[in-house]
Each structure stands twice: as C-alpha cells, then as structure tokens.
Image: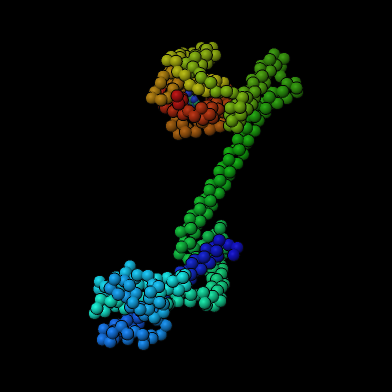
Length: 449
Ligand code: ADP
C-alpha cells in the first residue's frame, strides 16, 4: 500500500469488518446463554415440583444430560450434589442464584469457570420446605467457539484483508483518476465528483487570476517599452536641434561666408547651443539616475530644514530674478523633514526657476513654509503667465512644454518638472498645482512629517 488514500480506506474496511465480526459474536453469545438459561429453568421447575411431591430421594434417580443437580438447605448447607460429595462442599448461602431463589422463588447466575472460554450457568428454584434446588450446566463461551474454529476464522480474516486491500486500491484509483487527469492550466469541474468541486473552483479562480496578472504584466511591459522608445526618440530629437545649429554655424564660418566682424556673434551662438546641450545632457542624466533610484545609494537621508534650504535656493536665483525684474521672497517657519538634500535642492530650484522663467517683468515669486496637519508644506506662488487647464495634467511628463518655443527661449529642456516628480516620489511626497492662464501659478510641495 504505497499511498495514503489506499491505507486509509483499507483500515476503514478492516475496522468495519472486525467490529461487525465482534458484534455478531456478542449477539450469538447472548442468544446461546439465554437459550440455555431457559432450558435450565424448565428443568429446574419440573424437578422442583417432583421433589415437592416425592421427596429429596427422587433426586438420586434423576439424570438431566450433563447438568449437575444440587440441593441446598435454607441456611446454605449443601444436602445433595450429583457430582461432588456434599460434605466437602462449602456453604452456598452467599451464592447469587441461591439468595435470589430464597427471596423471589427463582434465581439465576452465570460464572466463568476456569477461563473465559467456559462458563457455568445456574438456575435455582425454592422448594415448598424452603430448601433450594439448583441445576448447573457448563457452557462453552463464544470465545471457545472462535478458538475451536481458529483456522477457518484466520482464513476468513485473511480473505477479508485481501478483499479490503483490493477494494482500497481500486477506490483510491477511482478517487485519484479525475484529479490526476486534471489540467492545472485549464481546470474543468464537469467530470469531477461533488466533493472536489469547491477545490476545482478555487483552482479555476486562481488560474484566471494568474492569467489576468500575466496579461497586466505584459501590458505593463508594453507600456514601459513604449515609454522607453518615446524617451529615446525625444532625447535624440532634443539633442539633434542644438547639434544641427552648431554644425550649421561652424560650416558657414569654415566656408568663409561670415565676415570677420560677425564671427564673435556666431561663436556666441555656438557657445549658447553647446551650453544648451550641456544642460540637456545634465537633466537627462539627473532624471535617469532618479528613475533608477541610484541617488538613494549615493545620498543618505537626513533631517533637513526646508526653510534654510529654500532661502539658499533663493539666494542662488536672486540675480536671475533681478535680471527679469521679478521680486523673489521666502518666508515662513522652520520646517524639518527627513530627506536627501541634493535632490530637495534640485526640486526647489526647478520650481522657483520655472516661476521666474514663466513670469512677466514686475511680477513676483513668493515662497512660504508652514505645517498643515501632518504635512510640511512649501508653497511657491507666482503671478506669471499661468498654465492652461488642458496642459496642467501633462507638464510633469518628460519633454512636455506648453509653449515649446517660449520654453526654449528661456532655456527650458522640458525635463525640470519630471525631475521634480521623481524626486518627490523618492520622498513619498505629493505635488499640488493650482494655475490659471494669465493670472499665475501656485505649486505646493507636501512632505509627510
Ligand atoms: P521647462 O524646462 O520647459 O521649464 P519643465 O518640466 O520645468 O520644463 O516645465 C514644463 C512646462 O510647464 C514648461 O515648459 C511650462 O510651459 C510649464 N510651466 C512650468 N512651471 C510654470 C509656471 N510657474 N508658470 C507657467 N508655466 C509653467
């Protein structure tokens, strides 16, 4: 019996068989005893009426099969016994059947003689003179029956065991067959028995879930592939524009089309385009580092005073603001968060730089720091050109610019807010944007405390 199922079925069969066998033996045993007692009773009653009529001497001439007849006096003294010498016998007043007979007229008892294989059944009847006549008979118990038929019994048990093994193995095969035939990738509950249906249904649900997840994963892969391709195309395009200008300017200088006095002007253009290239490459590098999470390896998180950091960014941008006739201010309470200082500085710089770039002469850029509920908030407000509602959702995409030529004019790459978005994600922080075209923009950077 190799498998567990066969073993269990086999033990169930054998248990049922042995229990049935035992119960039947018990019933037979009870029946035999009852029948014997009834026969003894008949004999005892018959004998007692004869002794009542003809006296005790009658007993000496009677023989009832192998039964033993005993006459007991009312005090328990044995007066006569058909098998033993009454003088050598002990007093019988304590015997169960005797006491019952004295009390109720009749009584019976049964006792195991030498072992459980044999038992003595007694029946006693009270005589008119209050002596008691008792008939006893030895009886083989059912166990003796089993012992005497040991070989057929062993044969039957062996046969039944064999049958149980065959039955168990067949049943377990039948139970396992539909399970073994089950296709885990395509479970089907039609050919299965009812106990297995809940399991199969769970299997079906799980397989559907796996398929669904696989699909989602594939879609996700496709999406990321598309994003990567788009990014590569965008980068190539963005790099190409300044490179084309640079090579164009260099070409006409080389071919002698530029007069000596204009050379410095052309050189300045080449310088500006090269600068633009540098900015672009820098931004791309920053962004890809942020996306890969490389920054986290290089930069430790520590406690940072956002007010101090914002003030230092404002100092760096002061000259730029002055050049564009923008008033730049930073106010508020000291606000501490745990973060990466270089990335945070980059975030604040990009937001403030945009607020100056997309502004108008005489405009303002105001930074404010405060706590709100369990957040540290840096609000950057400007009264610049604002962002049209339709574009507001997209400005955090890479290379997305509301007005491409204006952005280029003011030195934008379209990557600033992408860097902000990724940097904020690394800080588990959120960005809120309110803007109205022509009126201005308000960006709130909300950090968990
Ligand atoms: P860029 O390098 O072009 O500034 P960004 O990613 O920083 O790129 O910003 C994306 C676009 O969002 C900008 O081109 C600009 O059109 C718009 N934008 C960003 N900040 C502001 C602002 N404060 N006011 C108006 N428009 C803004």
